Every structure is written in structure tokens, then in C-alpha cells.
Image (tube, rainbow, N blue to C red):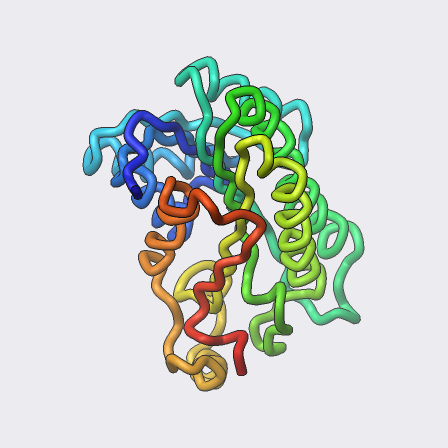
Length: 254
């Protein structure tokens, strides 16, 4: 039920440890992959990895997810190249490290919301049109444990980030309600504190304090997202829609 032979998966924010975990998860199950990012050259290394390890076709594309025309062009390019689009992972996101009282409105607030919320919606909208026409598809939005809790100050994340992830949870449910009866499932994955991304900038003593607030007493590893990604993308979750799958070591239960 996890096999996805012949299907095509698009990943925005298509580089970095979490995107790599998803790309490998999809390719292992038989998907060809599209890796898209504003700085697409950063996707090239992962693209070569996927081709070499899994023997799948990989398209690298440039996109600013907050630009509607650019998103539409990306979806058109994907369908033109592969003839279909079956899976989308909305992984493109940014954050701004500052206290609430020092957050600049343009860059630390508006830009974060524009990329994280509007960008996610634009990709869902454009991909959704293709999937609705074919009568099938799985969209996975990248939420965060931050949608359900506030991070400690030492993480350095402004409220715009957690707000955006909370909005993604509600967007996921709304789109699932609108589209699931027409064959398109929409779900979200919410990673907890992972040993990747913004966690790399947290110094050791603060990391230790944060770890004590996770019941498993460790940070997650990127590859631990692979099962969740493969599950939600594939027919293994054919009766699952509008849900948020937390992969957080219990972080949000305490």
C-alpha cells in the first residue's frame, strides 16, 4: 500500500535535511520527484542523490512560492515534464529570529506570513486544480509542533512563525473539507524539535534545556519523518484527510 510506482511528487523548499528525507521517502516508493526552491541550485546535490540511489527522474525548478505566476509556471512545468502530479509536499518556509518587541514588520512579520501561509495556499491551489481534474492526489503541508505550543525564547523564533504554522493546520482542514469528496486528500505533518534547520543555531546549553522538555529526551532526526511522509503520500492513508500527524517525540503532550 505504500508503493507509488509511476507517480510524481513535488517538494517545495526542496533542499535541506527535512526535504531530503521526504524526497528519499517518495523516491524509495517509486515516485519521480520535482525539487523546487527560490535558489534552485541548492537542490542540485539532492537531485543527484535521488537519481543515483533510487534511479528516479528528478526535475529541479526555481520558484518563489509567494509569487502566484511563478507557482503556476512550476505546476505547468511539472505536468509538461511528467504528464501528471500526484503528491505535493509544501515544505517552503522561512522564520525570523527576534523577540516579539524587536520584530521588524516588513521582514520579520509580513514576509514570513507571505511565504509560509500565502505560499502554501498558492501551491495548494495550483496543484489542487490539476489533481481535481484527474480525480486523485495527496497534498501534505508542513506544519510544526509550534502550531500547538510556544517555543522557548532561546529558539529565537518570532510569533509570526508559530502563527503561520497554526494557520497551515486550519488551511489543511479547510482544503480537505473542500476537496476530499473529489478525490484529493490534504493532510499535514508537524515535526517537533529536529536536529536540523533552525535548531542548528541554538547553542549547546540551551539545546540541553529544550531537550528536557521533550518526553523522549532527544531531538528528532530528519530520517524519522520518512515514514510519516510515505504514509500520507501513499494509498496506505487512503481514508485519512484533514489530519495533522505530529512527529515530535511527545513534545506537545507536556
